[in-house]
Length: 87
Image 1: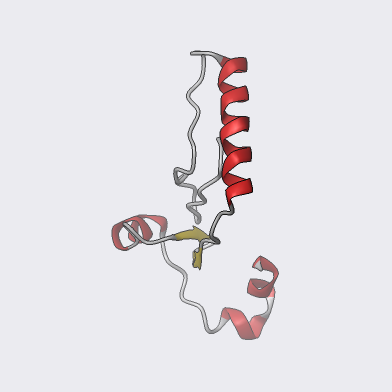
Image 2: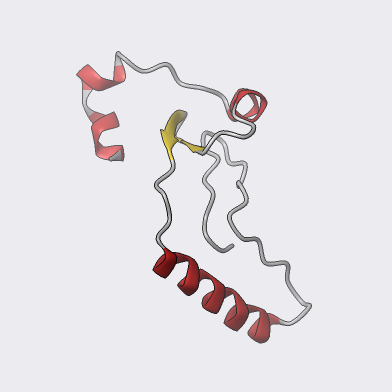
């Protein structure tokens, strides 16, 4: 989907949004900011949720209390706020 942003005709229709502004207006929305553009998040299937639970449990067993594990929380980057399943 991001390859669409590389086309000049698509870029002129977009208005880039700073990460700080996105956090201000997007609270409670099922979206994420990628390269300054807001995208709707895709719904998760039960299979996806089950794999996420299993992977999260395995990761916690491996790292113990040495690291924090985030699940589906936004990462504030320069022009994006992706919400990875696990980080």
